Length: 397
Image (cartoon, rainbow, N blue to C red; front, side):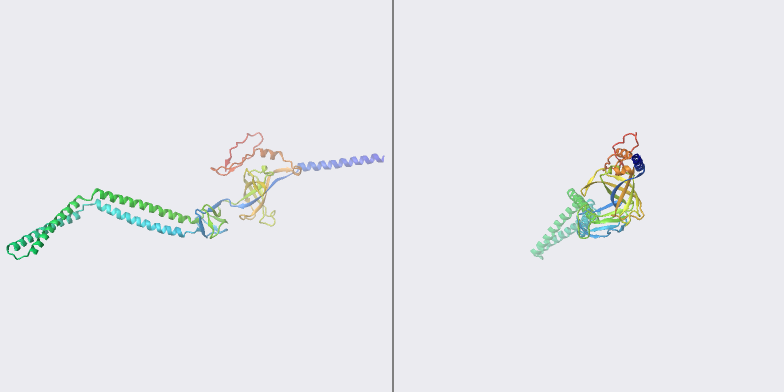
């Protein structure tokens, strides 16, 4: 009797224990909790403006340092420009000289094309008339000298010779004045006009070349002054005065104020397949001693489809839009991210069993592809069961 009673008690306790365990297992299977994927990220500007050096030059001065607020058009960096200013001054002098040379050539051409002028004709005719009058007077003097020398013997041979020479000079002056009048009436030769035109064309070409040289020198000088294209805050400064900035090298990064900050994050490849754009994110910023008390909210905007090797581990990149934070996050600050990808029962979480919904959602996701001609692509949203297979073509946001 006693042995039977003991066996009955054992069976009863075994049944009670099995029932309690079954109830616990059933409860663990029915109670669902958030399925979370952890990630880490850095707060970065939503709009990054890279201020890179257009020339290979030494930095003369950093006008706006990290943390300074700048407006569009403000000077942020000055490169060494002493030789560029000298080049502008030299080319400006060359331009002024080219302008003066062109004016002289144009004036000479205009002078030739206006020939003969009425004034020059009158002067040439007047010179010829004076030469005729002088010849007539010299002829009379010669006749008188001959009469006085041959007839009355009052003049010497030298006086006669002098009168003869003056008469011959007057005849030569007549020829010169006549030829000069003919030249004035004829005007300039075609060869002279062509030469003057060629000089004008050459002067115009020199002026154009000097103008281009001055414009190029001024553009190079203007490039030495680097300005901010947008309103923003200097988020990072890579170079300092006295350092050589290579052409295309980034000097600083400006965070544009037209877009809100974002978190550039990375997550391990384990469970990365469950993360999709649009899913909520809990932001635990390391700015605070107790991140849980200052928890922020965000939303995934982009998931990169290719893993990279970071510190010996494969990670996937993603971008998170900041929806709400108790205090604005500082640029460069780090944060832990809890990405809520769905719900799983406690039992599934303990044994690492994935839910059917997560698996179906993962099957409906295409690998994102970045396009060089359009905006950043998005990842296709999971479709319901029975829906048609989504296209592999990425959409631009």
